[in-house]
Length: 394
Image 1 (cartoon, rainbow, N blue to C red):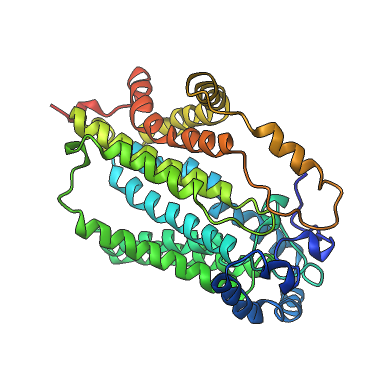
Image 2: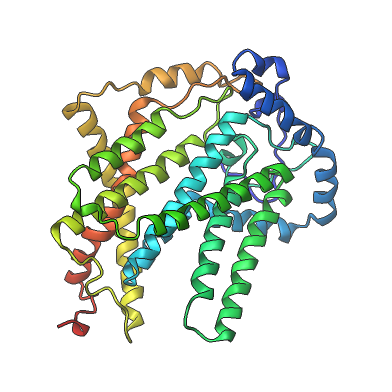
């Protein structure tokens, strides 16, 4: 059941992951992993009281509504629905860079969350303000919201500052980007979801992934994946490997599912790029807007509906049927659910149970299907609805 923005989440401290004492983690971690966790707990064990005082000082009904609502602008579902828009405006490279930055920001922050197993600030004394209880059941540091917001903001700042628009328009766009960024980072503290270590480490994840993407663009400037038959095999193998070999947390934490989704999107985009280069397809054909912005509005409506149909109606039965009946993959979902049911009434966070392997692979392929749907299926439908700007091409 969703939480309203003014709700106070009161629960047993051990219900949240990461709040057990050192003995709970020591025998289940490597010596290095445990030592780094113990070092970082000095910044998390004493944060709740002063963060609660700060929250209480600025807490109002409208602030709670504002920060709880704007937190959705860094959720993976928001990005999944918004990332296709550059392609539908004829700017496919805008998708590639942003997908890589966001995906690896999510993966890196999620990996470190599960590696360190650090708690969020405690509630009480803090009030957890959220529209979904899902996000309250994750570890604290690093903040994936801050990682995503940092990566997205840095990339957008680079785009805006290097554009040919006027100084006035650039200033307005930069101001909007900073407002977006400060809203999301400060909002994580205001909502009682993260402390300063969480926010700071999340920012570093975003910076690292943005710089990594910039370096990759320079190193691979002349690389054409369509020239190599092995590229899609490598992409899928790499994606599934980093997911199936992901670090195991000590307590149950759902943040891994976001990593699966974004890594799937990366692989889907890479395979799509390989296909259009191999087949010589111009995926930007007819996608320019020109002097007809109504075409873009139509594409948003039709394309958004197509993505939703794939994600929420078609993908799951198709993918799971393929995995079970064609690849003969074991369906281990029921066993995981039975194990998880043992802890439904527990006052403590369950020990790590993890996702069913078929769910990891299934979710990966469901999200990997989004880029080909956006880049190949949508233009075909756009053509049927006369939403392509074909007049500008000879």
